[in-house]
Length: 209
Image (cartoon, rainbow, N blue to C red):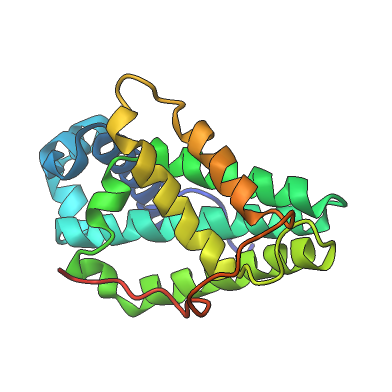
């Protein structure tokens, strides 16, 4: 009788351990930023420190994996909202979800410029996110609920900008980002917009400095 494919065995253990490590690392970096140690991450995951290094030889590899998961989540959020009837509400929901995600992860903006995030798969994930958000933004432009010169890349960059604006208040006013989200949304609307002085941005470049 032929063996059936199940969810047990060495490969299943590897998948489970990787998930546990990413969950633990995301939690650790969100709380401690780049000061989080590989040993602490292993302890949180309930795994040996050597297991961490088998999956992620360096901290940069681990940070890149976290970044990829976060970018994939944001792209998925944009994709799910494409079927919403109200394009303005969909864009608002996406932006709120995106900024809240960043506000919960202190490490994100700290690591965005690190050399490890120059990996081609991370760049590709950023490009995929911009494409997904452009589709969402295009629907809002078509419904004339946002100004016609706003692009998906504008929206992606605004997520980080709103988060950074509220970051100094994170400890005392963790929801302050909602105030700045509303200010940004007001600027996106079509009522009496000012002419934007610069051309739309291209694909974001991640500086290593």
